[in-house]
Image: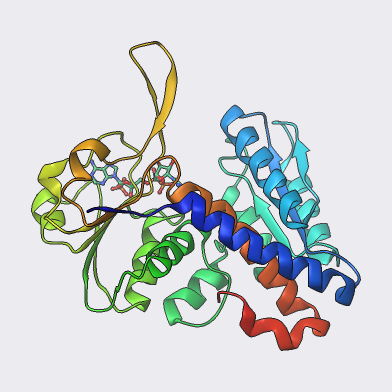
Amino acid sequence: MTQILDGKALAKTIQAQLTAKVHDWTPQVGRPPGLAVIMVGDNPASAAYVRNKERACDRVGIASFGQKLPGDTPQAYLEGLIAELNADERVDGILLQLPVPQHINDVTLLNTIDPNKDADGLHPVNLGRLVRGEPGLRSCTPLGVMQLLHANGIDIAGKQAVVIGRSILVGKPMALMLLEANATVTVAHSRTHNLSALTRSADIVVSAIGRSHFLTADHIQAGAIVVDVGINRIETSAGQYRLVGDVDYEAVSPIASAITPVPGGVGPMTVTMLLHNTVLSYCQRMPALAHERGTLLS
Ligand SMILES: NC(=O)c1ccc[n+]([C@@H]2O[C@H](COP(=O)([O-])OP(=O)(O)OC[C@H]3O[C@@H](n4cnc5c(N)ncnc54)[C@H](OP(=O)(O)O)[C@@H]3O)[C@@H](O)[C@H]2O)c1
């Protein structure tokens, strides 16, 4: 029987735990945790993601300090806004919704965020902490994958893992987190030769490419654990749209020992880890919660 790695259910459980903590901690601190999501422009997919994040914050009791700005907002204004949010005591997490319009230098903006409020875990200081194996705010999507593997009792130490994709958002931090958990890790990308031979030798395959039905039964060995990070919008024969991952789920799920569905796998865990990072940062910044710091995931 293939184990379905149900991110939706685990996200619900973790969000309920976070809600209870926020409920207990808010009176002790005198304010709830706060998350500021900065969105520039009107990309419809980004707007949907931001709405989703704000609703999730609301459910858990995190205050939102969202800023939706026009597409022609100057770089200097955004840098000033981030400096204000860095100094704002009510704000524990800051997230820049990507992508930003072309005239904006997103790397400079990400580097302007206070590393201790870096809810997305993408600041070089937090990526450096990950490389060094030190505690810090971890990148949400790979952290969500790790939680999904741990919560389902999947042993990672000593396993051969192949991560497909080397982005700073997913692939690279994913590889480092698997390495931190003592997997033997290979990172594949668009220039990798003979990818299917590589993935067929893997116990764990994580795909973060962004191409629908890319991974087929030929890529996977019997009993492998398959994590599908990809989110692709495809048109159905009825002219409607639906979301699929990188993995041909129908073909691969009978071979795998465990697999994440899309939707309902990694996606809900990403949002939940954003909430987790905001609460973790709140807990670390507030002296009244010093004794609670070990009760969160990292
Ligand atoms: N579920 C979630 O919560 C979540 C969160 C974030 C992202 N995503 C999804 O995850 C996917 C990847 O996101 P991303 O931001 O990492 O994308 P990205 O920056 O476009 O990176 C894609 C990676 O895939 C590699 N790649 C492309 N074609 C390939 C091929 N034919 N064979 C092997 N590798 C190939 C690229 O290699 P090169 O480096 O050589 O170009 C690159 O490293 C997207 O579908 C995105 O929507 C999902």
